[in-house]
Image 1 (spheres, helix red, strand yellow):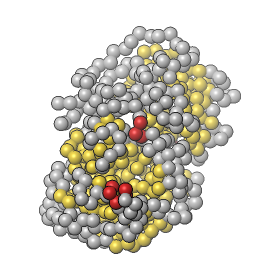
Image 2: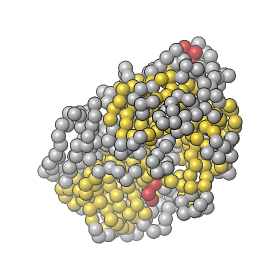
Image 3: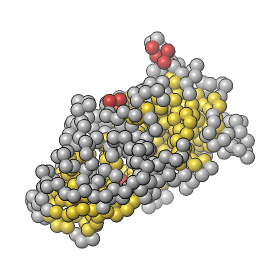
Image 4: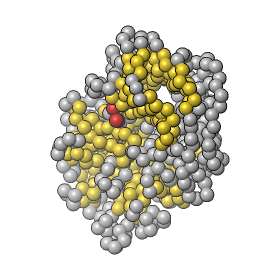
Length: 524
C-alpha cells in the first residue's frame, strides 16, 4: 500500500491575556481533512513514522540506495507487545512520506532477527552481486531464544543477508552466522561502515558493557581488531545499538569520530537513553579524552538511534525509537505500538572548548503558518500571556529568547497541561508531563519531572523549537545544541500556550510563530 500527503489545516483563533486553565470555551475552528479513517486511531502520530499495526522498536538497517531511503525496524507482527523479532521495512524518497513494505527478514533456525545495519557493497566485495548491480547487505544479530531459555551465554551471533533488487527481497547467507559467540550474553547490534583509510569494512558491536570492533574484506570473514568503553561513559545498564561516525567539526577542517552508544537502563531521566563519545579512530579501535557523559537527547523517549549509511550528500541523518523500555509495552495504544523520532541531521561543533553533537530535524516537513507575532513581546515579572488555537497537536512552536526564569504551559480544555520550566540560575530546563493526559498506565511515566542541563547557550537570544504530534513532544534549543523528546497521551487536543515570566525582571520573546505540520498518511 502506498501513501501520499493529506494536509491538516488549522487556523488561529484568539490571542488573550490570562490564565492557561479554566478559560471560557471558544467557538470551534474548522479542520479540513480527507480520508481521515486511515492512521487516525487515538494517539496515532500524524507526521512521525509508525507501523501500520503491531509492535515496533529499534530502527535497523537504515540505508540510502538508488533514490530510496530504507528504514528497517524491530517488528513483532503478531502482537502489540515485544515478541519474536523480524525486520519490518518501509521506504521513502524524502524522509517524510513513507511506503510500507513487506517484512524483510524473518526468524530462522539461528534465531530471531535482532538489530543491525545495512550497507551498499559498491565494489561487490561480498560477491553477492556484480559491479553493475552491487548488493545491499544487511548485518544483524541472531537471537536464539531456546539458547537463552536453557541458560546458555552464546545465544547471540551475527548473520548477514543480501538483496539485488533494492531491498524488495532478501537472501540469507548460507554460511551464517558470520561471527560466533564464545560466551558473551549481550553480544549484538552490528553497525558496519566502509573505512576508506584502511580499505576494509569495520563493524562496531556491543558486548555487555563495552564496544568491540571487527574488520573484514568481504563482509563474510571477520576478525576482532579492537575494543572500547569498559572504563568510559555511563554504565547503568547494557550497552546497545552503537554507531561510529566520522564528522567534520563545523567551521574548521578538523575531523573527529563520534561513537553513539545506547544504554538501558541508566539514562539521565530514567530507563533508556543514548550517550555519545567524541574522539579518534585509527582503523582498529576508538579512543577519547572525553571525561563527562554526553547525551544525544535528555528526554525519556529517544532510544536506539543510529544513522543512515550511503546518504546522497554525506549527511549524518539520525532516527531514534520514540519510547523507553521502562513502559514501552503498556503505552495506551491498541492497534499499533510506538513510533520513531523525526529524522534529524547530526553536526559537530566546538562550544566552550568542548565538542558538542547537535541534532536538529531535517528541513523537509510541509508546514503552514497559523499564528505569528512580528514584534517583540515583553512580559513583566509574574505576567502571563496566552495564545489560543484550534489544535496544537500537529504543530510546531518556534520563538527566540534568552535563558531566563520562565514557564511555558501547553494546555487543553480538560485542564491537562504539558509544562516546560526554564531555570536560569541553575541552568536547567524541566519538562513536566505529570498532568499531560493519560499517565497512570505505568507508575514511572508521569514522574519524576525530566531535567536537562543547559550550559554554554549563547548570551544573545537563541531559538526554542517545540514540535508536537498527537502523542509526542520534541524540543530543540539553539538549533539542536540540546534536545529533549517525550511521549504524551492527552485526552483532548492541546489548544492553548501560556507564557509566564517567573523572574524578577522583564522578559521578552521574539519572532514567535506557530506552524501546522501536514499529516503524511493517506491510504490509496
